[in-house]
Structures are given as structure tokens and as C-alpha cells.
Length: 389
Image (tube, rainbow, N blue to C red; front, top):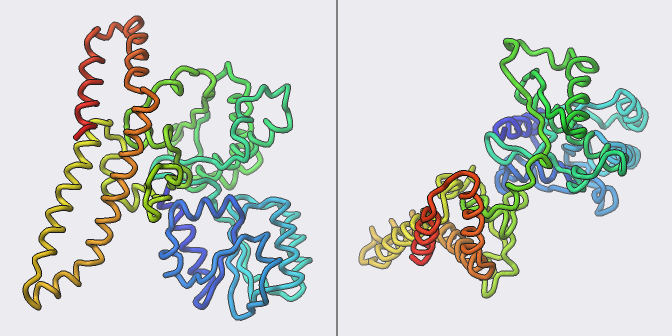
């Protein structure tokens, strides 16, 4: 999925031609782009400015020497902003890329607003979801809690959320070029509604768009309701990514550590992205005990490297140090980042007494699944021993 979004973005910029570019995004496509690209990677593709579409029309002077690459969702608000841009242009030309299917009426309105014929192309690139890694994605929803509201009590909120989910699922299917068999949880009205909307879109309204040549039954879309299992989210998590997500919080691969006592300024916000961090990629699902050992091994290895760099006694040593300095700094930052995150996890585990909580959770499991009485005692003791290393 990350590769799909990257390929879409690469095509947008290459098809816009060479020259200085400004990337115009909305709040959702900003999240989609930053999930797979860093600022330096975007800059390397001749994008010298990234602006929100709604703010760009209000701020600054005209820059007619620059090309505007617009990557936005096909919404009525974004359509209104684009029309204002075209009536009073700020940039020399506009390349419009929508993250999902565009209504014909929207294209007609854009054509009428483009009196200066500044629009060079309009295309649909189906990246209407936030790719977390190669096999996971999320659909940005303004109010996720509306997923759990009874549809008959809050019809407008639940319908808006369902529509956004259907759009995101459709975008993923188009990115992967799949026309799936749809299965859903029959006892859930939300699951049934989402499945029905996806089916009508894929097999009726846009059947030609989803006509991919795959053998029948090769892809299954399974839609289930989180409300069907209210217990699992209440259980304590003991793997790296899950612990950070639950105890600290991750949004767009970013972890906010500003609330952490005595945190250095450069670590107030850190990035945990398996696409760019080999240590995180290797240990993303490591349990708490193994994670402590891995971080200790990384610190020991860095200390050896640091000591070797202190022994500079010749011109060759200085030259080698200068050549390796960028890698050394990157490794230093990575070590400090993971040590800071692990230290905060350890502090929160102690403060919230999560070891004891997990023992209680385990004792409840023993009643239902027959886990040996001493299993969790040994396991939690092992976690506490490793966390002290």
C-alpha cells in the first residue's frame, strides 16, 4: 500500500513536468502524503513549497513562475477553493489530481471557472487512504466515535462516516486493482450498510472501473464491527508498536513526547516509521522484554562506535570520521529516540501498575481457557527483569 501511494505521487510530479512546483493539499491529503514521504524527499522532486489549499488562496503574493500540483479530495469545499484559485490565479498553471472518483458536475464547474485556461490536466489517482505500512491503512475520519453510534439515533453523523469509509475502501481496491467478493457481519447494521454501499459502487455504479482481470474469488473483502468484540481493546498490549499507540499515541507515524519529564528539545516529537527506521521495522511487534534487550544491544553497539571515533590520531582517521559522520549522527539520533520512547513506556507501566493489571487479566483468562496458574507470574517477572536491563 505504501508503494501504491508513492507511485501515485511520483506520477503526479513527473506528469506535471520539470520546473519549480508548489504542492497544494487539503488536511486529509496532507496526512496521506506525509505518511509515505519526508519533507526532504518531497523537496528532491522540485517541490519547493507545500501549502493547504484553503490557506493558499488567502496568503502571499502571486507566484506565476511556479506550477501548482493540487492533490485534494473531490469534495464540495475543495471544489469551491479550486474555483476561487482559477478565477484569481496565484500560480502560472494548475495540475489537478483528485484522490478519488470525481463527479461530472464538478468537472463542468471547474471548466467554467478556468477562464484563463490555466488547468493543464485533471486526473484521478486513487490514494484516498492513509497507508501505515505495506499491509495496513486507515481512512481519515473527522469523528471516529460516530462509527459506534446507533444509525437510527444519529443518521447524519453515521451516514457521513459510512460514506467516507466506502470511499476509502473503494480507493484501496482501485489501488490494488481488485474486485472482491464481499462478506460482512450480518448482525451489525453498520457492517451491512457499508458492505451494501461498497457492493453497489463496485458491481453496479462503477462496474467498468472495477473490471479487473482476476480470477473470481481471488480477493475477499471482510467487513466486521468492532462492537462485536468489546473485550479485546480493554486488554493491555505488550508489543512495541501497540504499546506506543495505546500508552503514548501515534498519529501519522509521529509520537508526541512533549509531556515527558526532562525530554530533550530535539525529542519532543519523534517519528516511528518502519519504512525509514530499520530498528523499528525489525522490532515493531517485539514484546516488551525482548524490546528492552534489543535497545540495550543497540546502545552497546553505539557506545563501541562512539569510542572508536574518539581515537583519531592521523589524517586518515580524521578523513574516515568525516565520511562516517552523517551515518554516526543518524545512528545517534535513532538510539536516543528509541531509548526515550522505551523510558517513557517504562514510566507509564510503573505509574499505571500495568504489570498487576495484566496479572488480573490473565487470571480471568485462566478461568475460561485453562492457562496454567503460574504462567503469567513467570511471564510478568521475565518482563520486569528485562525492562530493568
